[in-house]
Image (cartoon, rainbow, N blue to C red):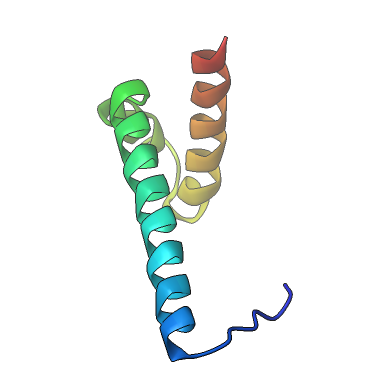
Length: 72
């Protein structure tokens, strides 16, 4: 990461506002995409098969697999 240099307080506030808007738009898009393409009930059922210690890794594999299927 590189430092960000701003000229004054107003420029800093504008930068923070712009970054916040960009991030919230990305999160909103990601949420809508997940709701459209991922079946959370199916994922939950698949995760129930794994011990708690493996569920995070299993979730990542399942979501990655589903993402590749939806792109095709």
